[in-house]
Length: 124
Image (cartoon, rainbow, N blue to C red):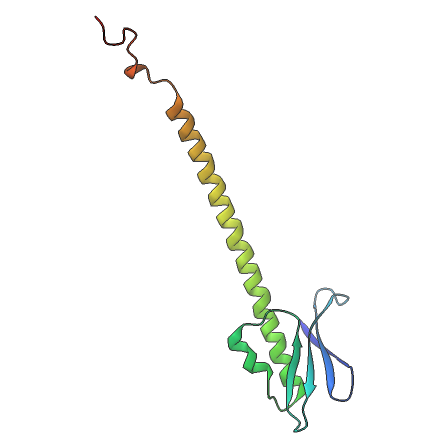
């Protein structure tokens, strides 16, 4: 993944992530802004950033450092999404298998048990 910057104004830049495999795929991940003291921070983040990573995109000395940290946070977000999707698939498979075994067990439990059947209802 590459980080791409597009100037909005003198103090604001859009940060995009460009996929290495397909250069035509670009994802906008945030907007950086410089304050009056020359410190850069991300003012708009277009994905849910983890709280312990928020301070990595604030009060940086240059735009590139702030943009790279935002890109790293994006990579961690994507990795977390893949993990959650895989976990969801595993849980769905387990739930389906449990449902199948429960249905089979219910079927076998519902069959007539010949050992318990008394055709004379207890009379000789």
